[in-house]
Every structure is written in structure tokens, then in C-alpha cells.
Image 1 (cartoon, rainbow, N blue to C red):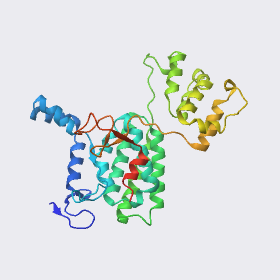
Image 2 (tube, rainbow, N blue to C red):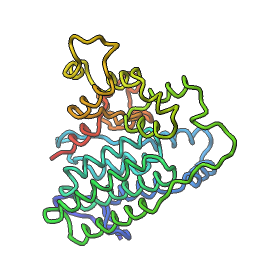
Image 3 (cartoon, rainbow, N blue to C red):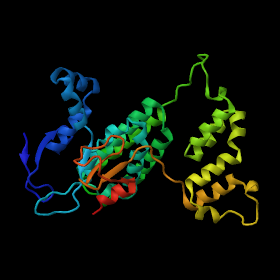
Image 4 (cartoon, one colour):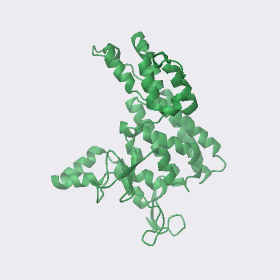
Length: 332
């Protein structure tokens, strides 16, 4: 039965008891709605509403959240990180390949410096997203290496925050058990090899097509792994034009000048060596197909590909939010 909490953490909020403990009623409603099967939702909308109202309701399901910068006479409530993760549907965003890497990077930042400082509810939401990431990666057989690195970072965060974490020790032990189960699932998973169906494979493509595909890869590790599949791709992956494009994509001119020789001709530069030196010094540039954005008019945080219901949708200017900038909005 719901009750009204009057403590300093969330005064006046309605709470409801679930199988995982007490949760805010408004966040619990969002979780229930987002976890419903998509086919069931589509059928309910089709049977309950006419065609004109279906589009309106689907637009209202676009995940966004109003960001309150501070407390005023009109606004007495601050948005927490836990509520932002639920309202922005981070667990559902992992099903979109455009937003998968963004969510992974966000969880890496949380595991690196913020997990022990989160509330118990926020920790639960983080591990729900982590499990959703693994389920989608195993289902699609993509980004398994990224998940492996994320689980290792989670194990380190749980070990480092074992003493000074917020919340009960029982909840922290549950997180450790959850990570062990996820690691076991990932270690036992084996990628199914493609059967010889007579269709065109990647190595059957013309060299020009393979070059174009390799140039679109944003991570040099993907280029190296792809080169190990055949001799032809290995030769193409060592072309200087490819590594030159990767250098200019990930690093600025000022960074490249640090290792470029002044007297040598540009055609004689070993761009693969330059990339390796720059990568060790400056790191790789993170690229995301879809990111969060902050509306300058209504202060809404939303996914750029989905948009948000703004009064001045055609006139408002939005600021792109990287995972680092998103975390700074909720830093205490």
C-alpha cells in the first residue's frame, strides 16, 4: 500500500512496495510501462484509441525530463540521477544501436567515480541498465568486448567501494552476486559461426568497398581485428590513407604536430606510427551516433533522435550533452 514519505530525501513523495523493495510510485509507473512488451502496447493503443490519437500518444512516450537547475519559489524539487535514468529510458535505449555506446560510456563513468556515492535506488537502476546491456549484447552478438570491459570496471568499483558505499551491505552484496552472474553468462557465451549459405561475405566484396567500410570504423581496434580475417583485408588495413584519415578524425592539428616531423614530406609519413603515438598520449575520441541534448528554452533533457515536446520546437536551440557533461549536471 502506498504511503507518504516525509523525510529529507524525498518529502511528500508516494512510495510503493515492490519485489525489489520500496520505490517511488511515479518512477515505478514509468518502469512498468517501459517494460511492457512492445506488441502488447501497440495492440492496446490500436484497440483503445482512433488513429489520430495514436500518433499523439506515441509522441508522448518520447523519453525526456525537465532539468531544474535549482530550487526557487515555483520549483521546490530537484531532479536526481536515479529519476533521470528511469525517465530517459536508459534500459530501453540499449536496444537502439545508435544509443548503445552512449549508455555504455555513461555507465563506465558511473562505475569509475560515482557508484559508491549513489543512493540505493540509483544503484538498483544502474544494475538494471547493466543487465539490459548484457541481454542485448548476447542477443545481437555485438559489442561483447565493450561489455567485458564494463563488467571489469564494475567489479573494481564494487571492490573499491566495499567499505565507504552508501546503502546497506546486503544490497552491496546483491550487486556483487549480480555481477558474478553476468560475468559467467558472458564467459559461457559463444558466437555462432555463420553457415555456408552461398551468400556474399565481407571478404567477397570489391577492394574499394572494403576500403570505404574500414574508413568508417571509428575504433582502430576494429580495423586490426578485421584485418586478421583474411590476407586481402590485412593488406588493405595497412594503407597509409586509412590511418591518415583516422589520425585527422580522432586528433586535432595541434596534437598531430607534436609527433609529425617538420622536414619530412607528407607522402612519406608513417601515419600508423603517428596514430599509435597520439593514441598513447591523448587517447581516442569518443563517437556516438545519438546523444542526449539540453533544450535552451524549456530545459528538457532528451535524445536528439527522438526529440521532445517543446513549445518552441522549431525555434529552440539545444546543446549536445556528452556523457561527462550529463554527469556534471547531477554532481553534488
